[in-house]
Image (tube, helix red, strand yellow):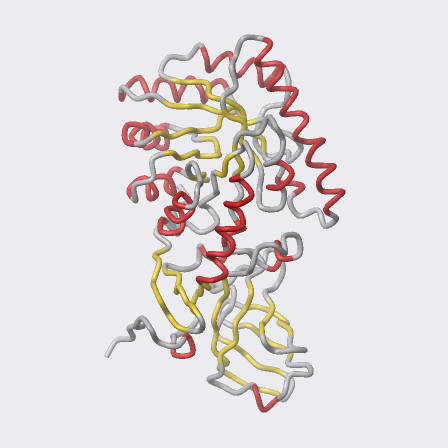
Amino acid sequence: MPYEPKLGMSIEDLDTPALLLDLDAFEHNIATMSRFFAERPAALRPHAKTHKCPRIALRQIEAGAIGITCAKVGEAEVLARAGIRDILIANQVVGPIKIDRLTDLALDCDVMVAVDDPANVDALSEGCRSKGASLRVLVEVDIGMERCGVLPGVPALELAQHISESPYLQFTGLMGYEGHLVTVPDPRDRATRVREAMALLERTVGLLHSHGLPVQIVSGGGTGTYDVTGALPFVTEVQAGSYVLMDSTYAQIRPEFEPSLTVLSTVISRPAPDRAIVDAGMKAMSKEFGIPQPLGLPGAATLSLSEEHARLSLGEASPARVRPGDRVRFLPSHCCTTVNLYDTLHVVQRGRLVDFWPVAARGRGQ
């Protein structure tokens, strides 16, 4: 008989590696972030690149989010099919293939896109003309991350003016992501540096207003900075994403949110008294923010990951407690790239499987 997990079964009976979502921690995180924005003028537009799961996106909207942020057209297509109408693609959509898909999407839902180049603006306008579509556009402003975006001030103004003169496009506002600051360890230092970075965006808003260009939306922010960015009077929406799942990187920055995402593995070998091997390697959990560490084994540590294995140093962990067949859970160091390795989230509550949520936008990187 093929393996088929059943609702109500113990997580100890799941095949591994398996991606687990603790429902109680997940609901705590949703409620915590919703309470913050319920008391402020800014709204929450959570980033779906974290979870790539329409079920989670719909839960976020039910809890008060005004829409969803995506990184790619493919993610937006999946969420639109799930019934989500207000979508920001917080990225540049370039080239005829992607623009054709984007304009199809614009016929079906209310989509926004970020731009930082006048030639791309012209291509978007022509793509909309050919379909009879219209598109809301945000100018992305580089406020210190040095990734995408035009410089603050006059370059942003000139691009916004170009958009406002382009048929089929609606200049809607500005976007600036202070992503280079989201993991600054000291909260006071982080807050100071975030306000300095976002001041570049605020001055640009003022410049556009002085030239008769209304700025309806100012979008930015992340899990590490939501409380600072979300309290600025000129910011209208925040794109925090990781808060809903959390990982070991953000756990050090944001203790108000609970880790809801773990990877369940099985001990497959005990080759030495001080060492164990489990069946979850780099194909089961990412390591670019650090090697994920085991939970519930005091003194144990992950030595290394290979494709299919993790090597554990047991340290002070009791040798009698760690045998082949035992289960070990890991807290990912980066939730976004770990989720993208799986087709399904196993939703668990008090140690039992209560639902399956497809990671439907997994691998939709185009």
